Length: 301
Image 1 (tube, rainbow, N blue to C red):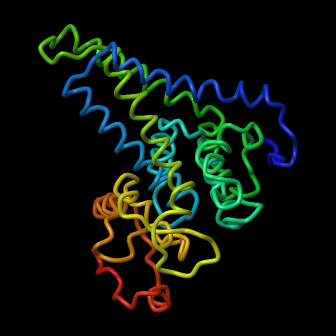
Image 2 (image 1 turned 180 degrees about the vertical axis):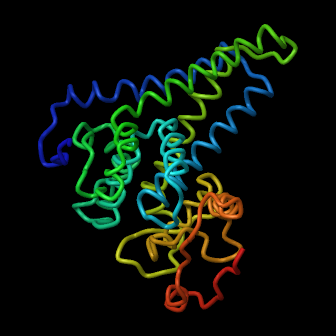
């Protein structure tokens, strides 16, 4: 298997620049909205692409692969991983291994992206662009590394997003000729459905690392600086309840109270009712009792 990724090795600046080029290119591609224009269909595809891929990251990459907060079948497990890779946040094993490392060393020098130690920009995008963290930390993800299909996706993580982008282009091309009244095109659906939605999903994910450890309120006294944010929770489908999450990472739901909107949790409950996932872990009573607010936990739903 691949190496563990030695973070102490100095990386030459030219390597950092080269590794940053694809990231910058995806951002630059969004400027093409000025040429391709927009249509209601393109905006709808952008929104759907964003929602589905962010859900795959929050429910799959984060709550399932990183924290094992619920159980599912092997086919659904693969589907989570496949859809997650289309978000262009690398492979499921790479992502989850690094996230487990984050929880072990949160907001310390050993953490990969602590904004209070290494600054906002490093926590937001700097660490992602550094070649230091390209390797998968296999020792941290042995439980899922035993599945060959997940190892394949982890290694060829660019295949699904490239395929997804191509399908969007072909869909737009087909509609351009079959239903010209819609006013869309291949390039339009590619730019809005893939590039714009990808950049948006990137930065809301990155905001959990950078903003959710600096801005917001702390209900629980944790050993890190995690905070809760209602607005970030809306954008991230529930990940903004970050202080809750660091209080009890094993919980499937991150909105611990009924008024804390957690769209990922609602989606997983629908999947539970359909028999696709099960054993959704909830925070035990002691988590609430030791909080700074003495409220009852959210009712079962």
